[in-house]
Image (cartoon, rainbow, N blue to C red; front, top):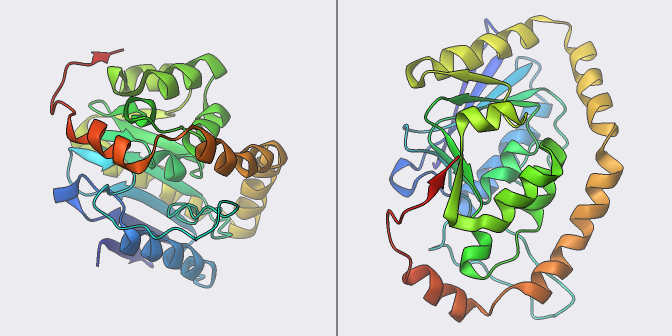
Length: 258
């Protein structure tokens, strides 16, 4: 299992942990399927009234798709399979509140998860960035989710600057991507505290409020996401050129933290 799920029946909170610490909690096809199944399973579990989503260890919350994963693609230019399309709780039709606890790096495909969380609590050591453009890929889904959660200029800067910049936890808090900061050792307790509060309220009212919040932006969000596959097909470099750029990257290369 690349995902661990702990349910606390006393509090009504489930903790979902991306458990691939050695891979910086990158998501392979198995993890993607487990996430999809987990969100759908929570829909039928009345003992789960709120969810905390986090990553194992302190180095990374999630670093997106695992580059070593073999992702089959349909034999048609009119079809695009996105292996991360179903990993978010809203994609799984889950309207119980999800609070993300971000420890370390959150980049690339991590925004599929952060983008479908109600709000984010981050460790003071967390950083956020989107590497797509550096490696000749279009940031489409990620950019859309970021534009829904922070000022347009900040979303544009993050998605365009690639690996040249990382957004600090403090800056993420200032622009509204993060709602609370905590010291690394206090991250999970702080996130659990908010989730337990949500789980303690009447769940029908909480879920209805979650649904109302998302309905305020869902039409525009869906229209933007529907365009993403075509933008990716038009703008991505061929896979072999992406692989070359990725292979030639400099581990630990200098980046600006802002």
